[in-house]
Image (cartoon, rainbow, N blue to C red; front, side, top):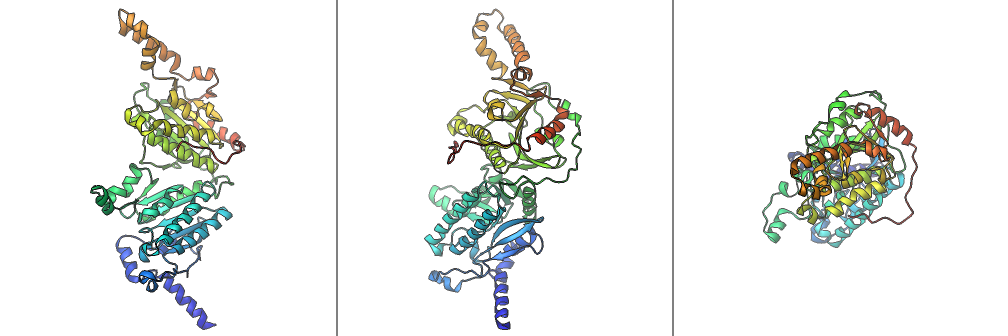
Length: 514
């Protein structure tokens, strides 16, 4: 018996070494932790339960018989983060470059199935060069198995991907199917084909960072949602995201002990919006004043900056926030912001987070590039997401709500439960200049002094429509509120809506304009 126990201990020790000490040293030299070191850093001490530690591949071709490693390049199992259960896997770059294999897929799919059945989040720590070429179609089929699990778990349990190193080819599709992607600066890259292949096929000369680095995917493509300065920062982001989320779609988000006065008023809000509607201000000031102090976690902070999305707390309860940002493009809606907003709204709805929308939007961005890029199709995603959502929804028109943007941004007609407005709200079909040019075209043409007539009509149009009272008179706005009372009004409203029950018609699924 003692001999057998000793054999087991030796096998476990070999598994813990991964690809060997030299490869571990190489990993450290790149500023990267090993797979097991990452698990130790992220999970509660002593909570990790490993599965599949001794699994190895069964490929003998290409000299693979002499390259067997216990675990086959991925560590899988279950653990706890701040006392909450999670399923987790960490690819081991010291073993054959973390290349994805049939055994890796079997191990990862196993814990994902158990996670879905048990209703716990799934976290992937990714560090892989892509499919294991020596396995041929087996590794490609393995990706297919993983993708199915990603899709089946979507909207059932939260899925978070942390890019800890290079991810190429099939390796990038799995994180793209998850809810949040975190990239680490300088060490993580994502691309379908690398710079060498691109140069050979298209003649384009590009480096790794420009093609698929952290900055690229956080600012240009929108593939990544968070950028971390190092691996420890990435783990802090994971923990912060999870703190706002339920374990699964059948639970409510976790409340923390309230630490901020629910009746707190910030009178700066009464003077924040400039009298001149063309002058910008920072919507983040509204968010920081209304929600529990320091609780705002912005998602996609560097992408489509004319819109803000993220998590925050109100009296300790997690909520999802969507807002236009007047500091960038006047808060206008465009293709990228439409994708950003609609995706976040659907996530919040899937996991029972109330959706609070702050509106200051002059409309959809005009232009040939936007039209040819499909602004109609992309803009419709916002409409679809809000109409589909059954979670509690509240909108606050802070300033501009023009035309299609008024409708799309959680208007009363989009099944929004409560619609508030500040006295600074301007709700109209279109801007005053365009409206006057259309409504009074003939009068302006005949007038002896067209500019005087134009100004008169502008003043009339502004007085009539550039306020929230006409909309309130028609029941499109439930209440015009003082800005400094927004926090208290939202807390009281959510107290009523917390037990809201709503559903959609029975169907296999809708057809979102993707």
